Length: 455
Ligand code: HEC
Ligand code: HEC
Ligand code: HEC
Ligand code: HEC
Ligand code: HEC
Ligand code: HEC
Image 1 (tube, rainbow, N blue to C red):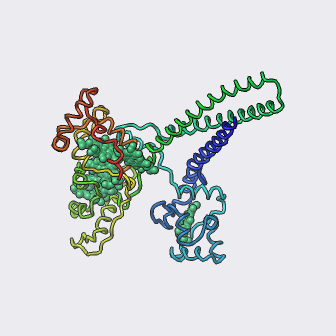
Image 2 (spheres, helix red, strand yellow):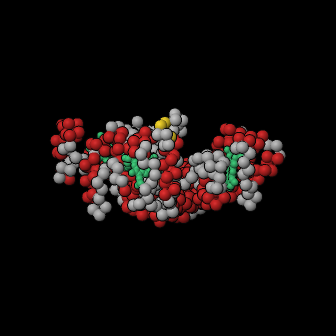
Image 3 (tube, helix red, strand yellow):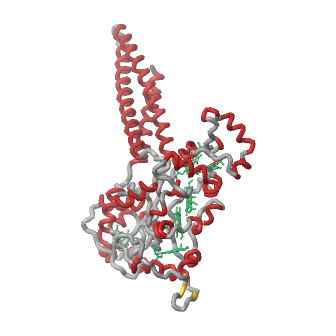
């Protein structure tokens, strides 16, 4: 019984830890969702998250003001509520940034509560992934067609968390009951009361004991499942669709004008990355195309003047003087916002998929989506880019997404690359996987080994 009591303490501690870590993962200082609303209603006239508008970009501002100005959240509260008052009080950093931004006045927000401000700051610290797009974007996404529709990560995670919490709660309750019983048993033993009651306690104890153990086992399994789930669906950015410095439309270039993806993203064939084209590539065409004809396609809400202005930005960037038809030498680099971006510890190679895997991926995608076939391999992962005015992430780009496709895509063992590369392996694999009639999916050639995708 003594040993049980020891265990019980340890278990309680373990459950406590579990509860507190899950709370710290999922609980946050401020509600970023509400913060987003407030931010959009009050701040976007002058601020964006990632770029300077009238005021500085506000992503990660809590950290930034700490390093740049040595000030804390308290300062941010004062600044956001009433920056004038703060400046008037002689605050050094407040006056510094006011000078830095050419004495542009920021509006005062006396009506924002402390909680509102915490929410906004939570949003700037941790902007939630955009909602799976609505209206127009939703159509794009639907058209984009997900090769491997992933289960909605948030609902799965929520179910796991809720069941974990429920089970943990139950366990705590049972342990407390047990402790009462142990105490009861002890006092009865001490006072030497009748044995039958003690025996009946033993029986109960034994019963609960197994229930407790079973619950512990379930808890462990659920925890493992939760961790795995978290790994598989971490960092879902589907729908991410930032604004770009030039309003470059894929719908117009790749869709209307039918320009091949690889004319601009030529490096996809050769290696790891599939870069954004340099301005020189644009100039190959735009040296002569200085205006938008506007005769066949116009996005609602835009007009010819808008598109012409965007084309002018190419000239500004490359220093092209369209009148004199010569370069002035004054260039301005264009900083495209990167949309797809795997963490550093992931190895993803375009050539492997665009060259070696091309046919396999197209075939498999078209088999899974008979009503939404693709002609270009890129679309299996990036969706129907040629229908998007603004590029957005069409898939989850999580580990679960990569692995799901590797499990279900049959490799084309007869293409030039694999024929050579897997000469010997092929026969061996055919024998090893007879169950699928000799079908070999990417996982069979190592596509789900950790080392293949992680450095
Ligand atoms: C009318 C334009 C305007 C609006 C609206 C505005 N700001 Fe500002 N903000 C600025 C400018 C300009 C600065 C730069 C400092 C200066 O010139 O006073 C700034 C600076 C800041 C800073 C300091 C950043 C740093 O790098 O030190 C924070 C924080 C900030 N704003 C938050 C907000 C929040 C939150 C909102 C919405 C509730 C908001 N601002 C609304 C114009 C604005
Ligand atoms: C005329 C040149 C051009 C053509 C043709 C073109 N793109 Fe792009 N692509 C760009 C530029 C410029 C950007 C960066 C701006 C943006 O995101 O819209 C870009 C961005 C992208 C991105 C997002 C990159 C990131 O930051 O993660 C993807 C994915 C992409 N293109 C895929 C395609 C596919 C697929 C096709 C063919 C259907 C295609 N592109 C055709 C020029 C081109
Ligand atoms: C292969 C030729 C070609 C290349 C390369 C090319 N464009 Fe275009 N671009 C066109 C054509 C054609 C149009 C549409 C003209 C029309 O319909 O009147 C156009 C239209 C545009 C427009 C106005 C419509 C829109 O998309 O907003 C912009 C802006 C533009 N291009 C930017 C770029 C940039 C930036 C690059 C380099 C990354 C680039 N283009 C590369 C051919 C090209
Ligand atoms: C198997 C899925 C897959 C296919 C097929 C694919 N991509 Fe990608 N693409 C990705 C992933 C994953 C990333 C992010 C890579 C990173 O961050 O390292 C990416 C990133 C990009 C980028 C951003 C720049 C970069 O390299 O990180 C561009 C542009 C791009 N892809 C264009 C293309 C084009 C064009 C094609 C077709 C020729 C294509 N992709 C085919 C998965 C794919
Ligand atoms: C649309 C399906 C698809 C998606 C999504 C996909 N892959 Fe692949 N991948 C393939 C195919 C098909 C091959 C086999 C190519 C061949 O024939 O060699 C492959 C091969 C690979 C290989 C080489 C495996 C080996 O043993 O040589 C690596 C590494 C890889 N993929 C990484 C990734 C990563 C990382 C992601 C996610 C960011 C990803 N893939 C997403 C289809 C996909
Ligand atoms: C087919 C490619 C692929 C394989 C195989 C793969 N991973 Fe991953 N893994 C990824 C990608 C892609 C990400 C990044 C996902 C993101 O950032 O959304 C990732 C992320 C992770 C992370 C980081 C989660 C975080 O905190 O961001 C861990 C840990 C991890 N993988 C472990 C593993 C282990 C262990 C294995 C072997 C059982 C494995 N991976 C096999 C593609 C792969």
